[in-house]
Length: 399
Image 1 (cartoon, rainbow, N blue to C red):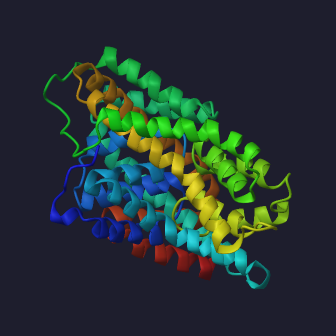
Image 2 (cartoon, rainbow, N blue to C red):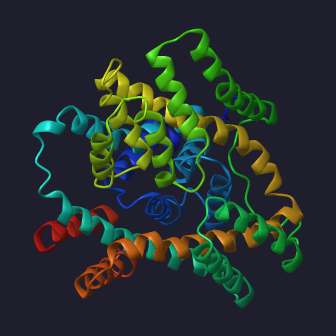
């Protein structure tokens, strides 16, 4: 079950440093994060091919939980085993978790006057980042009329039927369509991913996921404890969310506001701050844990809630990867994945319009800044972190 050894360029500390830079600069939400990941791991570092990256994204779209963080966990496992998964998670997650915890502790004294302009600039750069990802993935994964048409149909369906299960349904439908529309590739196709988790190991992780989901509420009833109650609530929220980080918000609000753990005004203030920090939106859990009215709160409460909400993601990714790796090399599954990859691009294209475009582009100056950021990323090859900083500064100065 132990992942195989990797080369010297894939030590956990190296994975951590790469993801730490992403954790400090990846603004714009989960869809934008997938764009940052593609630029870093497919284009720049070439850790994955375009097809392999799309296959991992497709798997994580199936699973409940934060898709971008799960993609990061999968990449960490592939590069440096279980330690690589932890390194990827820590690098990508801790910057925003620390920032939100500090915000919760100092909420009464923090001046938020500068946030609206900076937030607008970060929303605008997210448009450019997602557009860059759609541009690059469409060229590689939808190079002909049939796949481009399938991509467009998936994008339209997601936009016209914005329900929680729509994205999963579109991926399933595109996979079925791929079985009939595309010829199985046989032995020619996707390269093997350096995965060292056996099917037995995968079953163990999946079993632990379901045991936690069922057993934690029972343990809380038998052994009443505020720490266990927090872990149970946030583990359940991380296990039952489809559709991205924003979908977890009503679940979290239902868990922490009615019992009086956090008041609603504090909840909303933390949600606003979560929009202004890089990294995954699930780190909002660290803010809530630090803001609890009764112990554990502060740094301990933050740590409990953060670990609880991300634990299901690790268990699901580590459990599903060995089965997914086998399926993706099957000839018929490769035909299905051709359709699924087109659907992934279509889902990303729909997200480029809503919520990314609709939340950011309201006036000509918004479009102008987004266009300049896109040109800088795609044609001038400016590092994404620098584009993010310039757009944030522009938002602060002009919005």
